[in-house]
Length: 475
Image (cartoon, rainbow, N blue to C red; front, side, top):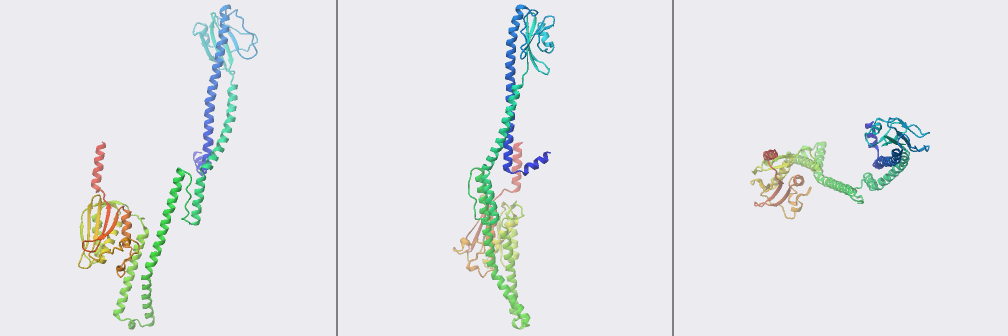
């Protein structure tokens, strides 16, 4: 039953839930108010009845004191209302003629006659539920009783029931009205979100209205739409740039392949293309294929953005730099890579950082003369880990510095060199994802100096030692 009720509740709309909650709250409030008011009214009525019984008993007791319990004149029974009785010293009783019989004298009332307590207020267990007051007088006692009258309480309860039903109905109506008014911004927000989903128009911001939580929700959704717009714009630019960059190598590759196919179909491949020309053409095809493969890999890496399955860990950046330099030496054997690294710990993704360092070294290798090494330095500087890669090449023109990290940007002097123009863009993305910054300057050797600053981290052993020290301090 509980599970079924839970499922029913979860299927209800927020407006229906607020209506039910408001009606239930009012019903519980009315019920509690009825219980408290009924209890107070019952006590007040009983107190008034007991006060009246005490007053009537004192009058009858005064007469019993003068005339004695056996001779006291008992008032005639009025036909309704109070009942009187005199208890004689021997335990017998006297009642007015025609008066309905009272319950037998209780043991506690008998003790009043025998000199126990001076008076006693009690209720019997009969169907009428009499309230009986016993007062000692003239060697015996007098009793005045009255049937408990619950009709005022019952009438009050019936009135409260009608009022409660009206309050519950009114509470449900008010709750529904409040829910409709309070949720109106949510309805408009939902309609706007549905319109954006149907039209795919991310430029349509949702109007900012309301206050408090509603305003924060609308602002959050508008921020999300702005992020989606930026993401769509970045994807469109990436696709346009990629199409532009792929056009030239694909065109060249297609023309060379069509030339080979056409000559081969004519049977004039050997005569039209001497061995030296054919070798040069095949080398060009291999270089173009390699360039396309590199471009495709870099486009894939760039398109992934910060989405990666690689977990973040505390690592020694020196290991990353050495691994990147080793890969760079294997890719460009003619260029020497000189390392000057110290152990600096950072928190990051090893493969992404290695790719960034490798791109820096590859970029420097294109410009550095064969007899001049690419210098890679790693050191700690304050709270940062600093990587510097410099070459002895011609350096970067001042006009190219602001755009050197843009996607597909290649300086005029670099047009003839291999590359896609994505390497340094990937470097900046990786550095930004790790909370660092990258900058370009001129090397003391005259070439380009690319500097990366990353937030340093405490070594794992030091972190564990500090944690152990804190635990000892707590103990």
